Image (cartoon, rainbow, N blue to C red; front, side, top):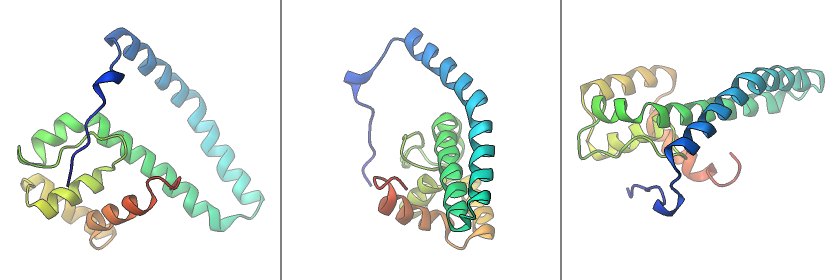
Length: 141
């Protein structure tokens, strides 16, 4: 499994990055609750129940990707060995990275425990997430 790396030509100054982070947080706190409520109401009024599950799944995946990026340093230290597939890639979920490390045999005990917990929700959840993201990543989920 080849790890992607950020393009060094795309680096920005720390100040510019911090301004973008602050703006992103403001937009999330202001727009996301409104968008979620409006989306749920619109789907219910349109009786688009088959799209409701897709909507909720997409939101869950985006939040999971956010968790993968924001928790990368903690998860890399706590859940995987130094030779493991690293957390933090923008297009991967936490489960996806856990699954790749499960296949590579590079999980520490807390990572194995987390996988067991996730498998209560869905059998082979982390392994399934690898297949799901690979199939849907560039198709707009």
